[in-house]
Amino acid sequence: MSTSTSAKFINSVYQTVLTRNPGETEFHQAVHEVFESLAPVIDRHPEYSESAVLQRICEPERQIIFRVPWIDDHNRVHINRGFRVQFNSALGPYKGGLRFHPSVLLGTVKFLGFEQIFKNALTGLPIGGGKGGSDFDPKGKSDREVMRFCQSFMTELHRHIGQYVDVPAGDIGVGGREIGYLFGQYKRLTNAYESGVITGKGIGWGGSRARTEATGYGAVIFAQEMLATRDQSFDGRKVLVSGSGNVALYAIQKVQQLGGTVVGASDSQGAVYDPDGIDFDLLRQIKEDERARISEYAERKGGRVQYRTSGSLWSIAKEEQIDVALPCATQNELNAEDARTLVNSGVQAVAEGANMPSTPDAVHTFQKANVLFGPGKAANAGGVATSALEMQQNASRDSWTFEYTEQRLTDIMKRLHRSVQQTADEYGHPGDYVMGANIHGFSLVADAMIAQGVI
Ligand code: NDP
Ligand code: 2IT
Image (cartoon, rainbow, N blue to C red; front, side, top):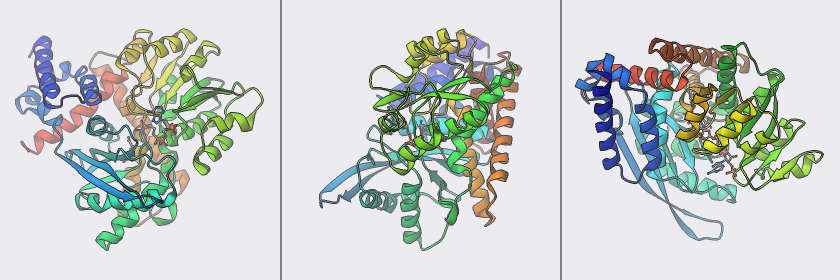
């Protein structure tokens, strides 16, 4: 096929995705972003169109939607909706997190599951792609309420998962507490201690050291590798990190270990600007131990810290020159205007700790300005990669040290960066990590799908 014929073919598949999945805008966006990179691959590989790999890869292998009833502390009955989208098992059991947030719809889970297919392939580890979650909001709920919700959620989910079938983990709103309740209920229902059925477990009961840190650390290692291609590093650099959850916190810690200063972070209600550098221990205590708001950080640290409820975190780049931006909160949180603010500030690199945090216009703005841009499916793959290392430890009934596990994570991120970079070079787009990640991830999955026949 010529490139234009390939582009027409890809567009016709995309039109089918639009009509088949009406209203699922985030899913459409994720598919479009991958498809934009694929014309040169379809050109080179007629077998991909002949075997309808593109059409098959957009259709989840299985989608499970279920009712989750639970009773609050005042004996009131609540009904939430649970999801698990088992997207693609060409490379291994479905693998991906669970998101508990009131905004979760089927289309959200499908966008996340679709991204997960390619991200998991890029890790080089044997994991397929899936995602799940619920519109349940853990905020403001008691531990007992969260426990009852998790038990109800798992009462249905347990029949669809297993260490060789589908292995959930955390995402927004699902951390160590939720994973504990989910695993406990799975164990109770199946009467088996199947450690490898879920990842992100506590260290004392089958969890992996460095899993908590892995996504944030991995994103910073990826950014470091990008900077190194231009003989730069984090040392002495000013950084903005959005969010203040699991990914953001450990991104902040790793930036500081590498000599950078994080001058701003946020939550869904506001942002803090701390020109002296975020105090990681204080922020971690407030967010992880106390589950409090980031406004609390500004109150307790005092001094020059400012708390802002209007404007986005990224507008701090109007006041302070920012070298690196790490969006680590949620999808579409960084728009074209934010991207222009960062570019005007002189930003050198952007690595996505969150899934699809930059809008398509923002991505194009960064790329046009020659900013190093690491898309989520490459930059935040360290979390799921370390989940796969947790599965390895569970399968061998072993428990590795923090140092060894972090070294494995670092090696995986460096190898991932190299393979994405090499693919971009090979296809004539040097430095384009979006093309590199999409093409490399897609090719790995497509080749396996073809080898396994039309299923
Ligand atoms: P957490 O729940 O720990 O933290 C999420 C953070 O993002 C919080 O600060 C939260 O603020 C903010 N946030 C969430 N939703 C919104 C919203 N709609 N608008 C503004 N801010 C919001 O989640 P994680 O840190 O685990 O996840 C963050 C991102 O990283 C997500 O995109 C997730 O998919 C991605 N990711 C996570 C991985 C992991 O291992 N955990 C692995 C790879 C990617 P608030 O508390 O006010 O809601
Ligand atoms: O988006 C992600 O990669 C995650 N939430 C982590 C998935 C996992 O299985 O560890």
